[in-house]
Image (cartoon, rainbow, N blue to C red):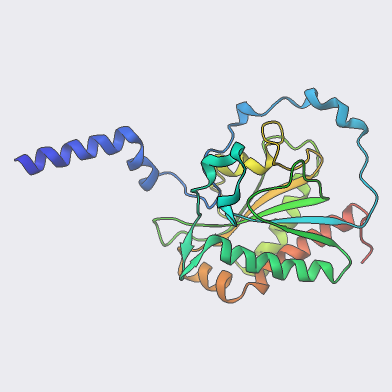
Length: 253
């Protein structure tokens, strides 16, 4: 009887703390926790001063952020995220997998004259690029979960993030054969690197920015693609970025 009572107490405590729902029902994501709520994002009309903003001179510029990489170096304003290490699978941490994808993507882009920054978890203050892609990999207690997803910020002042997401979505699905996971989370839309209204270490508001969950490290098939063949997701991402940069008149071929 004492065992049954203790078990009941533990179940109620888990429900009260939210653990039960998080592990059973809540879609999990490789994006760090504490994402901004949509209601936290400012109204667009507060930033009318950006209407006359002009792109800096120079070649096309891309920022590729490796999610959770060098997380321990996050600044004080983001210190609560230092313990967020991301998903694991196949003996690899999330950042190791996405770093390989970022490096392959950068090699393809640089060969065409595109400037590329590979960034860790800490985004330089007010970072600007023609496009910024945060690379992550999902994890779930349900090992059957598979697929990729792409999302932009709650507030896209650049007006270009939806187009960027669409180009990446098309190229990624075609090249990888993965299905699109519809469970875009608040932590993706409210990703800290997008929250230029709250953090110094976030992208400039005129940067077209998205976050890509490249697949599930906890799924055997997704993991095989991401770890053993990083050139495939990298090529897909590069093609989507080239299409976007062409649409902006920043590259010719």
